[in-house]
Image (cartoon, rainbow, N blue to C red; front, top):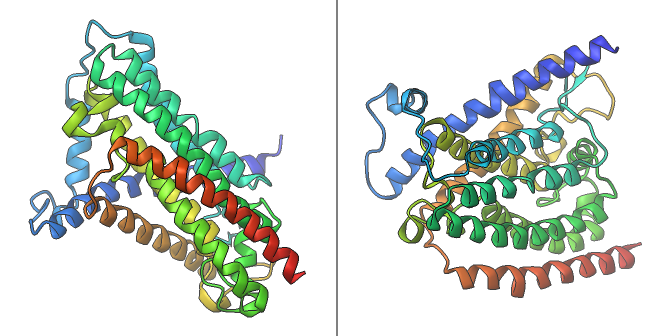
Length: 358
């Protein structure tokens, strides 16, 4: 058994997944409340700790101490399984995200797979099973309607999400997320090709399909994470609370945590594919691939990655409290009539540009 590899992987799992992602979930909940309060000219949480920073801790204690009530009419096995199926995929997908260059000679990625985006989409698609099971196992009409809505919505936008990434794969010629970030660090971010090869005619022309991909990817990510204006599976005005109406205590908290964890991982994937991941602009502090990285520089790269992710999370929150909810027919029409066709045309446009510049 390769003990050094096993120990290094365990440390990265503990540090990244449990000491960074989960606290970021709590901070996202706090930021959601503070930003929404600022947008609506309210105060927001300000009693528990300085600036209300301990409010997520108080919420966690509340969920732990509340009675775990299971209604008699539910299908108990599936009812208990559903929250875990929502939370676990969100944490598993963080395994392939490169959250830094390297530290102490170790790559800052838990699993350096050559099929990174495919792994993320494959695992993230399992979340829909948890939501469907929650709606069906609750044996109640509102959760059932929420589960049905979620199934059609997530399947529809998964197609757009996958198609939006294909132009990037064609441009980079690579599925390893670490090497994709390294390429962007040296030749300009996909969305901001302002140095290296990005300043060439090829970089200028390819910026058009990349921008289209970014719009489709970001919008589809809102739909995949059930965030406003795409929160039809759990909209309070129509379905009480949707698929988690019958849940309480930590089971409800797992749905809540799963949504925010998926939002964070989605932000991390967007940052990795479009905004250069851990890299600084204009190639600053960019190490050569495979070269040793000083400890301070490795820590800077990790900080840069999480700063970008936090910026993207704030964008998620801002959109939620700025736009009204779509009607369900508008949501499905946007996915199938517009985004699906635009994403397909964008793949063809990218192919034509690559053929022209070569």
